[in-house]
Length: 191
Image (tube, rainbow, N blue to C red; front, side, top):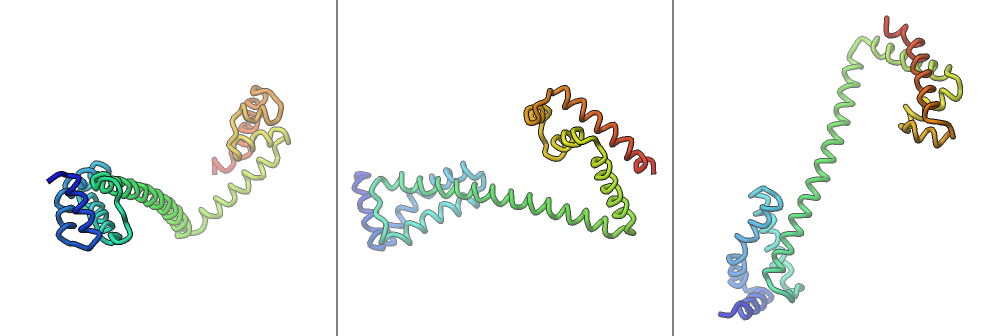
């Protein structure tokens, strides 16, 4: 039987709800579609599920869907799109898990701190206060350049352009700031 006539008969049969036509379609294309899905996902069980979903979609929408092109192209397009959607979902899921792990790590760090006798929290708060005081005591231009670099993450050249000074000036001011901060905070380091 000519493949075009076969496809027309299968399409018409499925549209009428003929389970035999659907079974013939399934038998003809399942293995090839599973290989395609596996090439995308790298997982046999996921590939089979994607192909099963493609066939379910055809069966469930048989009354509304009019397949104009070849069944081969139609099925391969569904499986390809479902495989790509699976990979996108996996990527989002992994990003979400990574975010949750980071949040959990922060919570665990806080828990460790809070389970101590409290002195480490007091020391950390005191050091933070001392650091803020030390930064506040820097000369205004020096403080501005230091904060643009350390707090805002700007590069030396970005700071130079922003403030209309040379890169050399930025380097010198950051060096001055670090020296002054080191001197003021040395008390905490020695303790």
